Image (cartoon, rainbow, N blue to C red; front, side, top):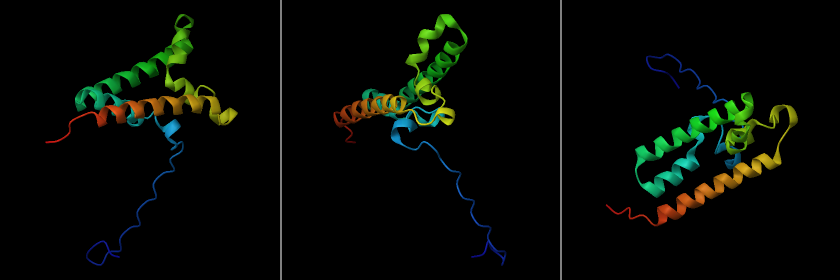
Length: 128
């Protein structure tokens, strides 16, 4: 295979390894593109893409700030259990290993949001 004019094509780089691809963990990871289940549920309920993206972005930022501030300010420590970021990295999985309870909580959150989204989408009239 050549890249044109007789120049050999460079091999494609292999994609980086993606850890935590299980739906339970992938739903609420710090990567903002992973708040898919919340976007699915909100988008199916409301039907407007912009609203779904805005709600998802605000929820992601609020969850991150709540988790971060709860670790630094004692008066805000009640916010930490409300943030999915706490269940993603709060148990320090690289140091302490897999946290089954935290993964189960994330799995339940994902399952509930996907169920809400699927139910709401099945009720929508998508005929054009």
